[in-house]
Figure 1 (spheres, rainbow, N blue to C red):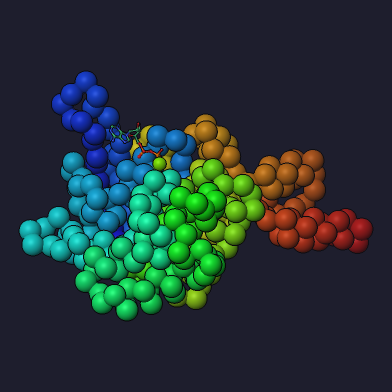
Figure 2: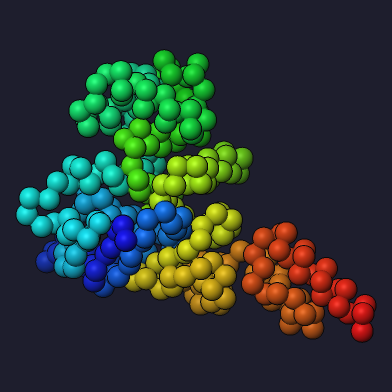
Length: 286
Ligand code: ADP
Ligand code: MG
């Protein structure tokens, strides 16, 4: 078992008029190698949740464990934790600040105390794995397009060689093509390097295509936690939380209601097609 939250509650500005209960009694365990999606309406606590996983914020009550060790126990090396558990913030381009792309991505490994040669090697590997071309390495991060900036920021975290990568809405504000490219690259990282991925999103469609488990946050609570098909079966409750199941879920339920014997758990176009064809054939046979 890799990361675990035990009864975590987090309150912003406790005891003031701004007091905000962002997380309440959250229990979660994420084993090594999983590709997990965290979804929820704006303000549901997603960003607060993920900042607990690498020790950026400390629970008001409850415990956070990494590989069975309480990360807030005395003497625990939080700095080391942060190189194992990499967090790419929401709008990470706001954290780009070095004069050129390569130097920016070297920042993390440099802080880990690696030699300049090793830093550069790590940075080049990381940049290439997220599809940033070499001719951009000496450009200022600020000259890049939105999608490229996002990739550079992801590379900056990857260069620290995390075994757990958290991405907080990595595709927010990107066009559909930029979004798909980044998500495909993240999936490749997961498959090729076996990195555990926690992908925060507010788009069910995005998440449905990639993850093996979905955690639904609602008002600081974990509302659902399970395999995508299981979570989508609650599509009516998801709507009350300002979320929607993938469009295919609605189509399949509607076909079923109209008397067609289809699999309502189909979420992708391919699955739906197969199920509809099968139902049509079955009808003909009768
Ligand atoms: P999400 O990422 O799902 O949009 P957040 O974790 O950012 O949700 O926020 C959860 C709740 O905590 C929201 O009501 C938000 O307004 C509040 N919140 C977030 N960050 C802060 C902060 N720094 N100070 C006070 N309240 C905050
Ligand atoms: Mg957020």
